[in-house]
Length: 135
Image 1 (tube, helix red, strand yellow):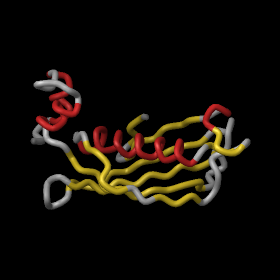
Image 2 (image 1 turned 180 degrees about the vertical axis):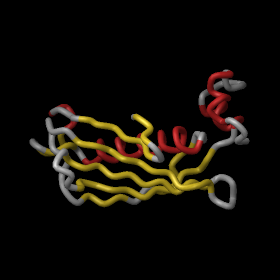
Image 3 (image 1 turned 45 degrees about the vertical axis):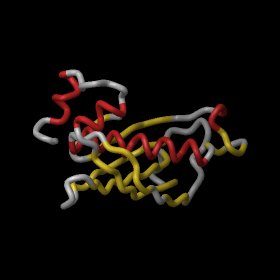
Image 4 (image 1 turned 45 degrees about the horizontal axis):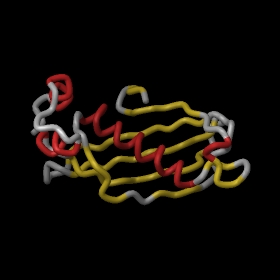
């Protein structure tokens, strides 16, 4: 994943190990790619580690095995509750045709919750720098 302006982008091609039908990437794999892209958007764009709360998605076209695709994820501002992030993502073919999209809600974790999720008593300094002034 690469941060480009206020987006996270990733170029990818998946092989037959990820097929659900002979020429299509399995839908569960696509959901994983979308979720990872959106989770990285919360980190790269909002400096928050977050977990998925809800994740509705729409499949318009299949993601094809062996073909290049692009994921683009965007993250809205932190909600009034200080914990909710609205994140969107799309996957498109090289010709620009939309394959799938998702609009998700993520729960932004505190520094302590992030450490606990990693099984650590405290986050390492390099991870604390990601949070900046965030709780």
